[in-house]
Image (cartoon, rainbow, N blue to C red; front, side, top):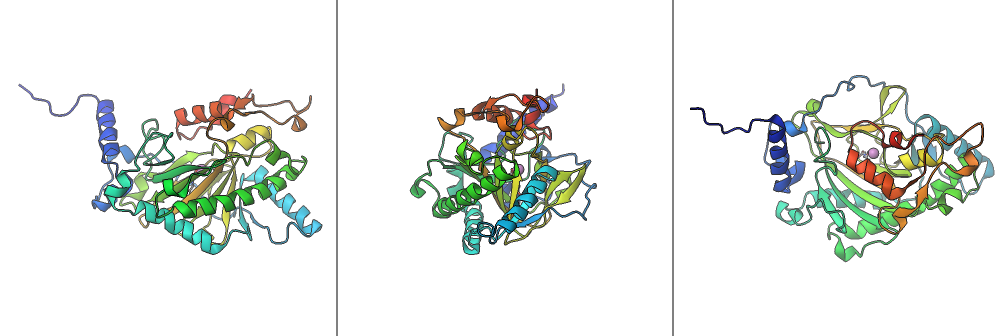
Length: 363
Ligand code: OGA
Ligand code: NI
């Protein structure tokens, strides 16, 4: 008689492995702390495109110094932003007005959170997004075909910022200060983006593009087998706009004309990218590009992504479609209208699988 100790179906194996890992509540960092030399199978990705990186083109850098004073300079910046949003959906901004000390403090805060004692950090581990703060490994952990080598702490910071006392002490106050600064920058950027689209300068702020902010503090531990997994699979963001702070480790890439291009780390810059909702309202004029993060043997890599979009009721029931000023008989709407919550529900249920959620809303 043969006694089976292994379950028969490989799917059953995978589900069990997912659950067992999730139950550790220690994230990817827990594996690395335990000194694993091989990555568990749930993290295995196929990376056929990894080699197709073109290093020459560099995503544009926009200098915001003096942009609110000199009209000629302002016109040039709007031109640069416009070109970047159409061609890349990505650019970096320098002289953005957020003090370097605050950027450094924010990175230290996120790193500090992920490096808290495991027992303390476990108290925050959850997939219940009605909690003020969530910490877990991959929001799409149970949906995606392969788990990403990344842990994330996240929190809705606007329009109703949480009391810092509800947040972990190691990063709470800084999260509130940093998010306030990001909101101010975002409002300035939405003015430039409105003008780039030929709209009234306050248009995008007026319709609520800068109404909500979601904060994601990512931690990508050093990986013993970096070629077998991914930090973040190819995806586009569910936001109107994303403001990203990354450290010096690198690994972020954006897809342009079927090539993967590195988004070079620059500690005085913030990376800005167009999200799906801005592509939708701009009727395909601005591009929400696919991007990903490669894993590395070195690390940890820390990044902070702030998504400008509504998340909670009542703001998330706002409905968006291509803005009427950008459509005409010759240029009809290419997307149907959607409430933010409907869009996000679809986006979350799909998970990050390299296919844009926007295609589901295309007419
Ligand atoms: C994201 C993202 C990139 C990074 O959070 O959507 O793409 O560098 N992050 O962490
Ligand atoms: Ni992203």
